[in-house]
Image (cartoon, rainbow, N blue to C red; front, side, top):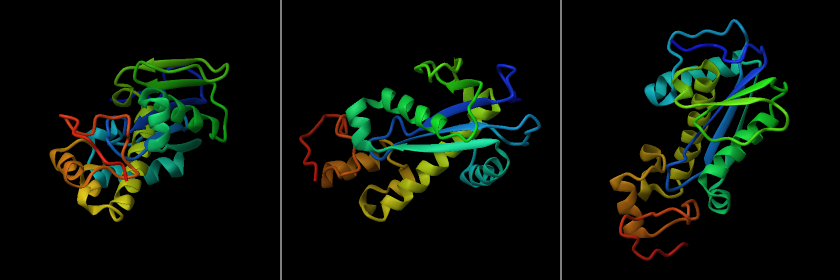
Length: 200
């Protein structure tokens, strides 16, 4: 059973990201402040839910959240910052865009940088423990999946609509045969044996 609050503050923001382990596309982060009476029967870590349930939840969260924001860190910036810093930067941008200033921030994972003077706590597997982090994970994942499905139309050979940019066998075969695209992360090991790649 997910808990609604960690800190006791009513304006507690949960934040999470999606796409850290992908070879292509952005890292997408979200921050969410939920109302004190928020509940939902199947809210959970986005990885545990079907696409249909995630899409339903996204609408439910966006309609009921006190505030939410989503930020995209595109692949060029991921290369520039490194993926951990890109994730933290995405979370910071999302928190900054909330219409209410949080009194406390809870973060999925074990790495974060302070956001101004606002106290925070990192929580390993937080998306399976606290509702606001689970809600942020659902927004981050659904927005990112939508983006990957859209750019799939441009480069269908990598089948991003299915693998969402993760290093599946099919995705790696596509890179091996056709090289890398403008959406691939140059700082990532795109092929296991690191064949030379032509970035077009």
